[in-house]
Image (cartoon, rainbow, N blue to C red):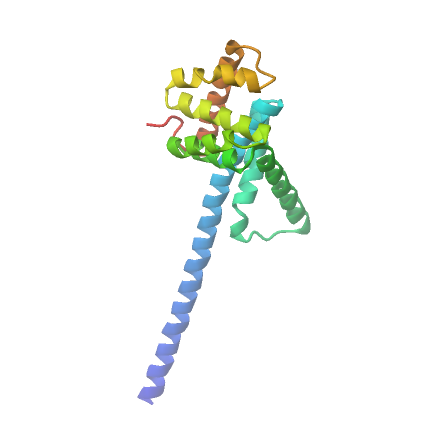
Length: 204
């Protein structure tokens, strides 16, 4: 009798342990999905902003669209389940995020994510790698990333030293004054992106 009772208690504890373990795993999955969504949104927003600088368009609107696309892609690991309409919209946003990455190239896109998170050394490594690519648009995205990485660290002399190269390679930049204006606009956009995703606006 005692043996059966002990066995029953043990089984109950085992069942409880399984429930707690599954609950913890589910919570971790959700947390990873949320973190991935945030980081994806930050990368997408920064990518959208630089895409607008290179290809034209409203920087703010492009950043907002990029945040939505990137956030959706970053949260894929969260096993989000919804209606067929939700899934179709999610797939469309994922496709848009991939197009954005194709426009800028993986090196520049990943470097922009690092820049948004104040990892300037990582951002500059990606920038240099992108600038050496044969694809001219990807190389230009890398050049813009380098300019912004220096300017964000308040090393504006280094950023401005790249303006002649920007003028040469970016057909939409006709003067150093215009390069300065676009750099300022991008830095303001970068700070706004950080603020919207609860990151420090300036790096220390």
